[in-house]
Length: 355
Ligand SMILES: *Cc1c(COP(=O)(O)O)cnc(C)c1O
Image (cartoon, rainbow, N blue to C red; front, side, top):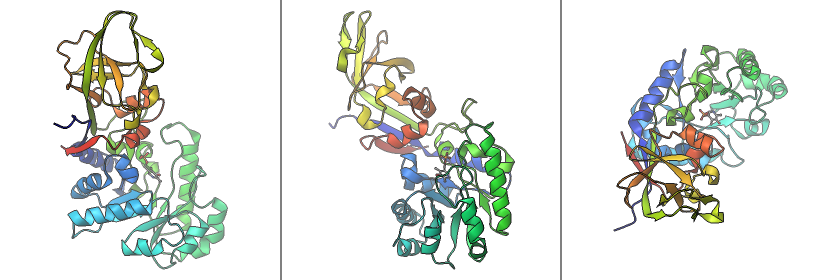
């Protein structure tokens, strides 16, 4: 019998509910889905196929290669549909034929990218409104405006730097700059809001919402209750259980020492599977009961304190992510964000798709 695996279950019904909920927030306009980084680690083709079946027809990835994989995967499942696929990072020199072959649309982020793309073929134009990451600078936009007006842009977009902090003054400035730029390109629709931007209010919505994280169950309103449904459950089997006396060290560096006689369960999950090494002290769950991570996180193993939990057997499944520990909590425990927890889940975890 093969070793029982770490199981990542992606709840596609919850994902679809999340997309519908976000789309329903739109003051006007539509809701796309960002499926970059292999659908935030959950499988871009599976995620996009579920959303396409639910009526989402616009997708964004970061790289051309991701876009091609998505196009091929979706076409195999939905031969009659050709949903929009935008490539956020734009195009690199020489990539244009592949964009054309697969009907992909680049986000043009710089004068160089504008030059590399045929002026009569639709694309997306990105302007920088305050993040200094991708997009035309205000001065570049002004200088290029006459030429830009002659191009068939299907969208003008920009990206918020601080949408997760609703009171940050940069949000208002970015909206105002974006509105001013949109006025210069009459008839071009706009897109500014990602997950958290959607909750800044109707002013931030424009014509197309671009959520990623919230689709996957992440909280787009940090510090407030999470309006999204949980999309992932991650469980891993216990490999071995042992009873230890008081005063016994556990794990590398002997950093944790039992204060009382304890029962320790070892699970087949470690930092190579995506759990940050600083997750020591986090609370996982076994049969609904809390079990703290004790001792250092190893590459392939972790040790949990299961003292007092009756009937702990090797092979029992520990819940690492799920109803009792969401991705935002995992981010906090790991000194990072739920975003990084999702995209770090290792390829050794077996992905299952369910409702
Ligand atoms: C990643 C990304 C998104 C989605 O952001 P979330 O915070 O995950 O919703 C939208 N737009 C751009 C440009 C992005 O890079």
